[in-house]
Length: 372
Image (cartoon, rainbow, N blue to C red; front, side, top):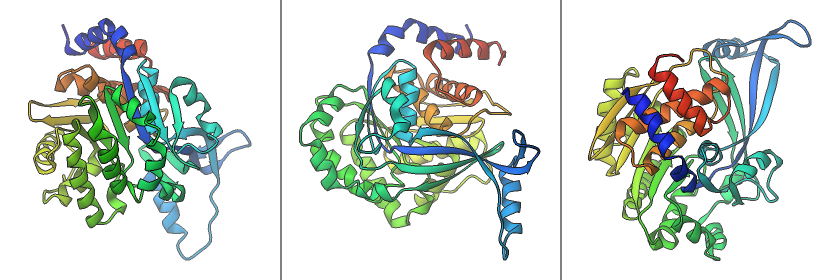
């Protein structure tokens, strides 16, 4: 049987098990506005958008030394943040999700639909805000993150005093911690959580981390973060998920080299080098058309189900992480985890929303027949 068809059958036979799994995600909640830049408007209903980031860059450069106005169209307003998006991916697949995030007090209306899928706990007075400019070849995200500075060890101590977060984590198969970069005190918060919560767990859960492009942080901050990240291995099995740009940055930060161009063989070697340098249990790297992973037991790589005209890109990496996390929960092998991740992301970019489990099973079947 084709490996993708085998994976579909595994999901089909484990449907009940999946619905009994519990996951915790935290801690970033954002209100995301999806935006298209207008190149030329035809009439009140129709316009030609700026198609590529390169074209958008030319328009910006042409405005240097002058004033410029460019119309934008906000196509939709979504609940955002990696903790929310990854949680949405898992909850839509049927996993029981508890999300502790900066979603506002009271919870911002943008998160109402998500709160119907998962148990949502507000850990922030105000959510962040992201303006996501979407193009055919990628996205540019501009985030307002000042409210995230209120996320401190003191704040965490107050929010965990009642023991609810500890009890929820004790019941979880996997704990996903996302968006270190945009929280200025997150390294200290990790230390506080290790000391007061994660070191007291009755079991060793799987941890999944998504840093979110740390290019804006200082080398000293990144070094301190990586040391604290390795300490989570005392609490459970630690997987670090990276996109190719993030993998290049961490490779350089740990004395290695960035890939001159994205390619699967180089990324595979890069994942193995990062695994050794960081002292974690598992590294996974994903790019537009491939994904690779490395652990002490096995390594794998896969090509993704590439989509030339995606419906939506913002949040695709978080759905990749959701698929990979499900693979971790089900104890799949390295290749199966990657295939599950790229399929989950592949459905998302094609339909603009998270995949259900039946949709994922069907997609894997179609992909095995090269019918997508």
